[in-house]
Length: 316
Image 1 (cartoon, rainbow, N blue to C red):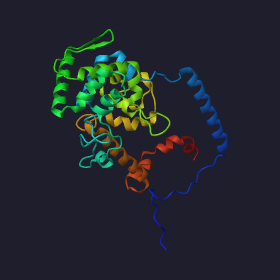
Image 2: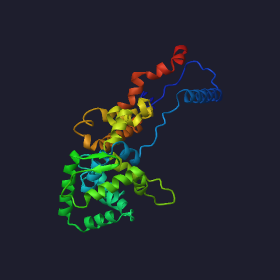
Image 3: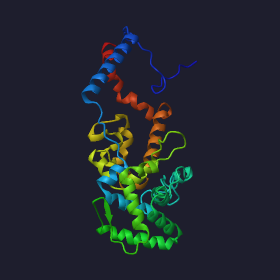
């Protein structure tokens, strides 16, 4: 029978070099002890930046006009959340990869009606304010065209509006009940009541902060704080701690693609879905590397293993 030809991509050559004793228990113990000590020492010396939570109360007290302007986009349906699409609403197709509408396939899992959920419903809990109750009744009974007219008038007047002495001052003459609603919502936000009104829960614990986070994300306050803390997307924010500290280094390969074209430019609107798809392809290639001709030969040809095991090969 003819001898089978040696295939370096599949067959392992018979080792003919020297052998050295190796105590894996000893090495493992030393590694665990050293890493544990380094973790404790570095944690004591550097710790992790601990920033206070950003809330709607924080936002509305720091920049009340930005809050009101954002609230108006929620009411008239022009905010980022209102026009996002799945998983929040049907306003757009959502994230997709080419012709594959991935977000639409997943459907609406967190149903958000910004006008009702962020403005009308929270204000409806303030039953002790007769003027507000009348305004909400008037707003609910108006036609869509009438509401749009009121909202447009108020939004236009916001450009010259001010906030002083705890009072919102906007010279809107044909905005119907909207001024009363916005003033009440601003007061509610500045007191902290709006934060709790937007928190939803399916059980005992109120830990679902989706709605307040979406509301804040539609304004500029949260984005500006993220930018100042080096946490925005173009600052590799996915893998950063606050204040430009390095964070989860194992995420660098994932977040790197957001920084380069076409993901950062022409494909930006669908970057999340496209980066995910690209990473799935890379993961699949890595998993199938032993079976892909050419690709499986790379480790053998680049010979990095000889650098890692240089002492072994020196004595071989």
